[in-house]
Amino acid sequence: MGGQEPPPNPLDNRQLAIWINSIGSIIVASIVVILRLTTRIWIVKKVGWDDYTIVLATCGHIIGMALVICELQYGFGLHRQYISPADFSIFQKYSYVEWIQTFQTLMFNKLSVCFFLLRLPVDTRLIRPIQWTIGALIISNAVLTFLWIFQCWPVPAAWITSKPATCFTFAQLQRIIISQAIISIISDFILALFPILLLWNVQISRRTKIGLCSLMALGLCTAGLCMVRTILNWENENEDPTWESVPNWAFRSWEVTVGITAACIPAMRPGYRVVSTSLQNYYSLLSSSGGKGSSSSANRRKASDDTLVNPSDKEEKAQLARELTRPGQVVDRDVAMRAAVHTASVEADRAVTEGGAVGGVGVDEELPTRGLRGDVGNGSGGQEQGIKKTMWFGTECEGSGDRSPKVGDLERGEGVRGFV
Image (cartoon, rainbow, N blue to C red):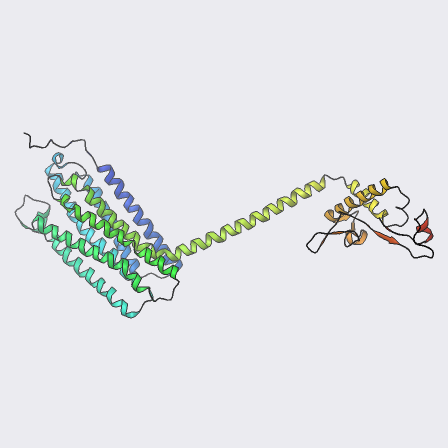
């Protein structure tokens, strides 16, 4: 009584988590492969064996996840004790086929990486090891797949245990799975570290070398997942395989997904460069148009402010400025009047400069607004107009130039010099 374990909870259910995991894995793998093919077809405009094999790996992965979803209908994710013998037999059949798919998917995934490395401009002496790796992957996968398919004779006895047949023992089946895992881990390490040797003497920038090697090193993540699922292989053969084998399957599914992603990311670099350049050009254009837009709005605000000025006021100020150019009209006015006229001159000058003309007469034709004596330098080679607007006037005549000017001196042509 004390040695018996209590029965499992019949309400335990991992099927929703399995379903979400399967769909998520399919979505991730499909997206990266679509991006890779988009880059190769429309940007690089060249498709190779590395693209064909990664498409085969993705198709195999989708088939595998579809098989897992079918397994949910026959008890995967539930406790074995609450599954009928008929359903459990169908579950084992789907699981048997799903392992075959795993072998093929992982092989095509690694072949894609090998073919990608062959596309790099490397020394021909380094091509031979990659070709050996391709041959080793194909031969080992063919042998292990053959052994797995014919683990029982007749073959259906692999999932119909009631039939008399000759089958491998559990330990022999584990050796098949462990052998495939060892080959997978070794190939992951070789393919992740081999780019360092390939790119060592290639005439590309150090930044590009580091980037490519880092991207290819993502395959080490696949090796780590493979190690974990190999350690969990015992879950596949126990008294409750439909429940206990879920973690092993989860690591196996993401081993394939991460492997496909790691194989696709380096091939998408040309697409990344195009997208980043396009975004930089777009934001540069956006910022420049924003600057032009702000300048246009400022000009519109300035024009609207100008429309608030009464045109007749502009004309009056321009008329006062014209009077300053006629000798004899300023010296007979008192200081206050000269200050008022000076202010009018400055405002009229600004109005004419901003408006372009007063009364239909151009600035250059009517009012001298640039280069006059008294204009103050602005420190940048130009002159600041309107800060001190003065005009030189004077006539040559006989007599002393020291006396003070009187009314009528200018009209009589007597010597008067000064600033207004």
